[in-house]
Image 1 (spheres, rainbow, N blue to C red):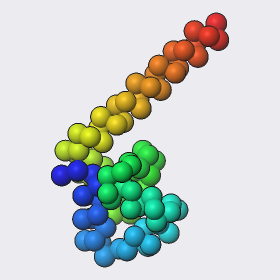
Image 2 (spheres, rainbow, N blue to C red):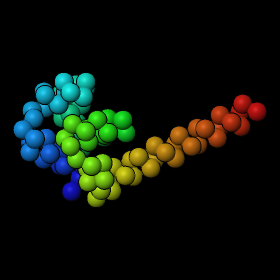
Image 3 (cartoon, rainbow, N blue to C red):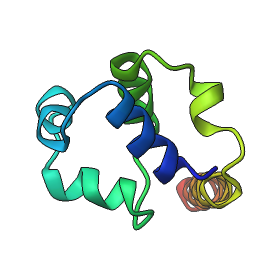
Amino acid sequence: MQLSDKLKLVRQQQHYTQTQVTEQLHVSPKTISSWENARSFPDIGTLVKISDLYDISLDRLLREDRTMMDHYEAIDKHALRDKRIFQVTYF
């Protein structure tokens, strides 16, 4: 199951509306909708907040969604590359 489907399912199981979640996480309703429709992913800090809000482990929340894992791996590779470029240009 993809993260987007899990976010929507868990929110509904907890009887939260999207509006209630936006108030708790301090994000816009459009952001919640984007996450639940797989148009974007929450950042790592927000994933921790979601985990706390829904009382679900990060492992259970994130496991099985290869698309999301690929997204975060690409971000990590990009950040590492930027760090190396900065180090080379700094010296």
